[in-house]
Length: 141
Image 1 (cartoon, one colour):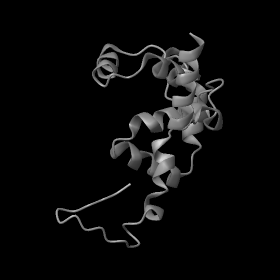
Image 2 (cartoon, rainbow, N blue to C red; image 1 turned 180 degrees about the vertical axis):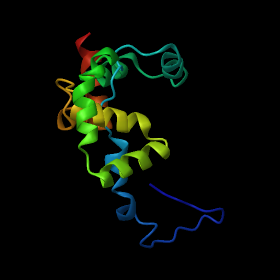
Image 3 (cartoon, rainbow, N blue to C red; image 1 turned 60 degrees about the vertical axis):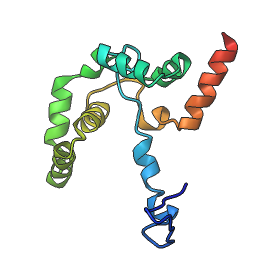
């Protein structure tokens, strides 16, 4: 990985080093979102535009619950949200305001909505995991 300014200089420093940005990895490997098994028309158009491999899309969708299953029990969800500490509610609202509403929704549904089989630990996969699984799927077909 390199970073160059217009002069082509690379300055190594605490804010420029890879160790300063390594924490972003967890942010780039979020839990599998719901609905990947049935893309919307705009999502399909984006996948086509980006020329995403069909096998890669298929393995990425594994473990993704259908959107309908994400509804959960509304009373359990309401009760869980009501019982959250104020500081956590503030943090969640701040994330929503910053444009992370879908992620917050997914987290709350996983936590309180009773969504079966979608624990965070079982759904996180790296890009390498997805690419390996897609290659394996291609070889099997």
